Length: 83
Image 1 (cartoon, rainbow, N blue to C red):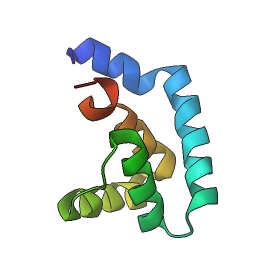
Image 2 (image 1 turned 120 degrees about the vertical axis):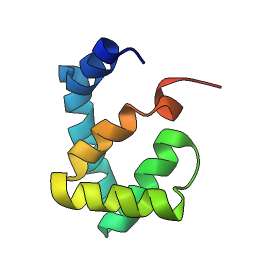
Image 3 (image 1 turned 30 degrees about the horizontal axis):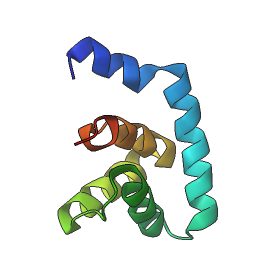
Image 4 (image 1 turned 30 degrees about the vertical axis):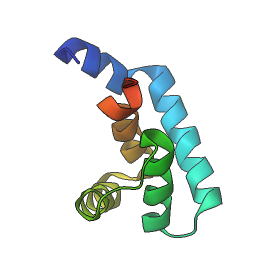
């Protein structure tokens, strides 16, 4: 993604709202943060996270919260583009 497009997607009001709603959904569907991250990754990419991805995503979510992690996942190329 070009830099301006990526920033627009990351900070878009719609993306912010959907990130909050997605995080709320994940909290209802899975009890632990790790399970929520696994579920989020599966839903956004269509595959489970690797061990390294899970560790990195868990660290990010602990520092910045689940809604912010959802924003990151929404901006992954795997989510944004279809192969």
